[in-house]
Length: 261
View 1 (cartoon, rainbow, N blue to C red):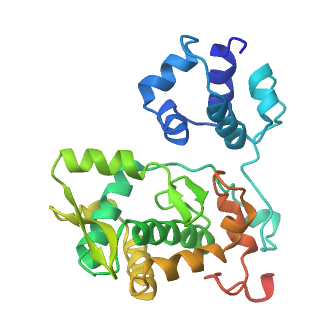
View 2: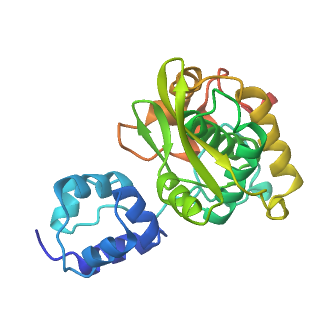
C-alpha cells in the first residue's frame, strides 16, 4: 500500500477529526492509529474500508491516496424554509463531547439504570435518541457522539473505550445477569453525575427521552431505531448522519415543523 502519512493526516484534519475519533471508528487505540499515520504500519483492508466510509470516498481513493471530496459541507438542507437573514451555520460534524457523554451516561444510570430492561443495548438506543432528537429539535449537538449502523441499531462508537475508563476510575460498575433467560450486561453508577455542565434545556430533554423510552426493552428500542431515517439512510458499518433527522417520518420525528415543511 502506498505511503499514507501526509495523506491520512491531511484528510483527517480536513474533516475536523482528531486522531482519537478516527481510532474509535477503526476500533483501535489512538497510539496505534498514530503509528499508521506516521507510516510505520499499514492499513488493513477492513480499516481502509472504514476510513472510506468515514470520509465519503471510495476504498480505491484511500489506497491510492486520492482525495475526491470537495469542500466540507457543514450546512445541509432541511425541512425548514429559513430566510437568509435568519440562517445560522449548523455544524453537523459529530463533536464527540466525551466529558459531557460521561455525565449524561451517569445521569441516565442514576435515573433508570436499575430498571431490569436497561442493559447495554438499551443504553445505546437511549443515547442515540438523546443525541439525534436534540439535534432535530434545536439544530445543535448535545453530546455529538458518532453512531455506527449495526444489526441491532445505532451503536455509539466511543462507548466501550469511555466506559472502560470509567470502570477503572470506579465511576461505574459492570454486572452480568439474566433478563428473560438471556445474558444481559448492565452498568450501575458509583457516583452522582456532575449536572453543572448540563443546561436546564439539556436536562429537560434527557428527562423527556427517559420518560418516553426507558420503559421499552432493547428489542423494542432497536425496532424503533430501525424505523428512523438516519439508520435507514446508512449502510452497515457506516456512521449515521445527523442531518438525516430533518427527513424523519412522523413515526420518529420529535419536532413540530408546522407550515415550515
